[in-house]
Length: 296
Image (cartoon, rainbow, N blue to C red; front, side, top):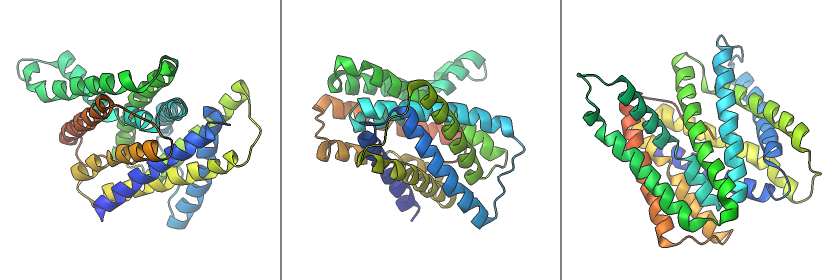
């Protein structure tokens, strides 16, 4: 059941990507972020009240930083989904584990001493290098020059997803319940989305594209709840690695719904990123045991 919860969560996030792909034809990224957050806020208010969870927090600045990096990652990811094949955008966002490994490696280099020689960080180094080689293999054949902005934005989404994950782990250690953390993150999405809409404008609702806005928010919340349930009841390392099934679902959607064609080297690069991400997750579990789920 634990594995099923994680696979279901990954499936919901991949399906959310399909909805974003359709919605991005008529709505900008800030609008999608706004509606995603609004649906989440409304749903979580009802959920926390039904469970008797207070939304009052004693660490508001930690939630503020989590919202800043989380919404930056979310906005970048939504933009890249509109510009790139769904599987490509999904894979770049899921590179967060590789980026965390890069951060750990950088810290080891800076703080190394005689007791912790850098040669002991070989697995981290291999995971990071393999991840970046996978990016080169996947992006080089799978996007045109006019998609460069989307590719760079996708990489940025992965970097900020890593920052967001580290902050979610810190909030969990501080005793903050997952529903409260996701609630303030959703509030941040509403705020940033609204500010962005005042700068870039608001598009009129067109049917049926406007229909996709509600399921984006619901799929995000339900996916997060599934992942949280998986982490709460399953073996952290096994569950964490199953999140990469989302890339498989996104690849199926790319082929069957959008007709995206990736050559063999592109799929090989995607597989290399998944392998390096799993390796990085193993190393992360050693450093941060029983860490919480990642947000999308």
